[in-house]
Amino acid sequence: MIKRNAVLLAAALGAGLGATAPAMAQSTDWPSRLVKIVVPAPPGSVTDLLARVLSDRLATVFGQSFITDNRPGAGTNIGTDYVAKQRPDGYTILLTQNTIVTNPSFFKKLPFDPIADFDPVSLIVTTPLLLAVNTGTPVKNLRELIEFARTREITYGSAGIGSPHHLAAVLFSVATGLKMTHVPYKGSAPATMALVTNEVTMSLTTVSAVQPFIQSGKLRALAVSGEKRTTLMPDLPAIAEVVPGVVLDAWFGVFVPAGTPRAIIDRLNTEINRAIRDPQIVKTRFTPNGIEPVGTTPEYLKELMKTELLKYQKLARDANITPE
Image (cartoon, rainbow, N blue to C red; front, side, top):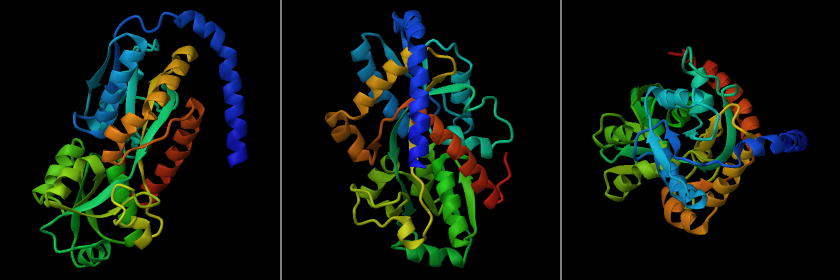
């Protein structure tokens, strides 16, 4: 698999180099005006945090204004569709999470095609999800939660249908055989507040969303959803240590409308990857929020998208989830 991916990547890079010269001629003056980074999520989300970090850095690098444009709603579909229909000129950029490849399995009809309507720029970061409960819930660890849930139907909140929060809980439910009722919210912030006020039993959400409430004693973290423990909370087990196979990180990527000149994509890729690996940004903005910088080629992200589209179609079938 690694060798095959390497061959695909080499071929894609070769094709990209061939197209660079004419594209460069068309885009040497980019950017010459304001650039929008569209976030299909509300302020206060990880997506919003990442966009603001990149907006500040790219404005400095390119000497033009880069602004964050929040367009939340419909499980990130509203903002994503908006970008899909913009001119492919580099002035409208999408920063979103893996909902771009999960939503086709959870919505009957989308107004965009995640592969055909977008050109990937970079997979920028990943973050594990924390499984948390309200401190009023009488469980102290993951095994106790599972036993608690076997005697009653529990509820879980998420940032919306098809969000990583939703999918991680579905994986957990399928693997444990627990009956769990999904309560979707319009973003991680309201989902977290529902957990704080005990409207739902549990939630799998980003570290940044629940960290302040864990520190104040209102929420209790039980486990993380990644393959391994997070350095931010090394005492917390990974869910997979107790329930094998339950592994799901949220990932975040940058995209542009399909047909954007390759020269612009390459310039964005270079500067975005450089920004997310900046030691100061990692130390002050990423590590405290459990965010791991990655940075990839556009080709890597496109292959990941294709693989994950199939993965989540299977998960939806296995969990008997009917698209809404």
